[in-house]
Amino acid sequence: MIIILGIVIIVLLGKETSPLVKLRSQSMENAGISLSYPSGDVAISNGKYGGVVRKVPPAESSQRMVIQDTNMSMLVKDVSESIKGIEKIAIDMSGFMVDRSLTKPEGAASGHISLRVPTEKREDALDKIRTIGVRVISENVFGNDVTDQYVDAEARIANLVKIKAKMEVILDQAVKVQDLMEVQMQINNIQEQIDGLKGQQKYLEQTAKLTRISVSLSTDELALPYAPDSAWRPMVVFKAAVRSMIGAMRSVADVIIWMVVYLPIVIIILGLALMGRFVYRKLSIR
Image (cartoon, rainbow, N blue to C red; front, side):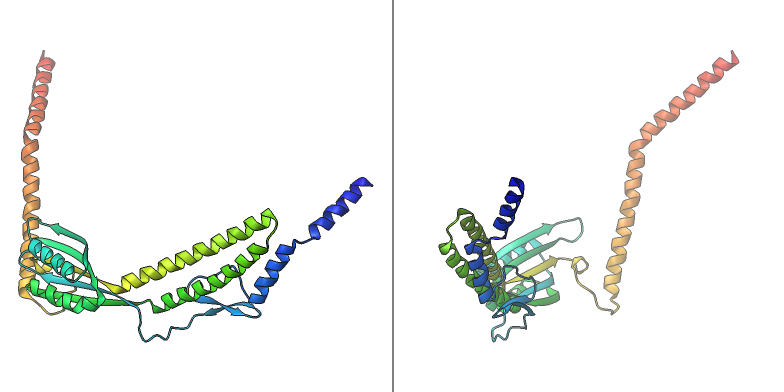
């Protein structure tokens, strides 16, 4: 009998709900707030009947946020001096050098440099860079419109701020330690999401303000990364043939050098083999 009464009491206690939980559920339901957030190009509406997931339409903004990257291949007389000149242009334009490299093989020297300058000074920087080289072989500009991503992040931040305010009200009304800890953990989680979205916005802003310019340089046009046109160019074919012939001759010379180095060892081995054969015959005759 005592066991049955104990089971009934446990069941009744399990059905009771904390007043704080009821208050939190009611407040979030009335506000139409959900703590689960989709990713990508979706947002959560604050409707009366709960969060409704919908596609975010393209933002109508007169000032679009576009990240621009420029790739350039250029023929120069001196790769090292050209890289120094391009880096100086970046500094004069209130920009900075991101990375650079220089290689000097037996043939033509080549190098690469990447820099960032303010977007509004991009054309001026490109004009000055063009004057450094002998000829611009190729130039490509790529744009990435991130306005919708920025606006979507802003909408999510606003929604999270509202949720955080509601949770802080619930926190003020909490009495039990367990409820306090649970609500505080949710507030911390919401704040982390807000900080992450703000960091994403800041990254988009800084990347859009500073355009990236990547320049490949060489004293030989064939060493530059570009797609040649379909026109037949005899000089280009001649250079490629000469380069191929030099490579073949180097391969033959490498083989000859290896043979000369190993030749004494081969002669010693053959000599020992002949000597052993001679001794074996002498012993056999006896």
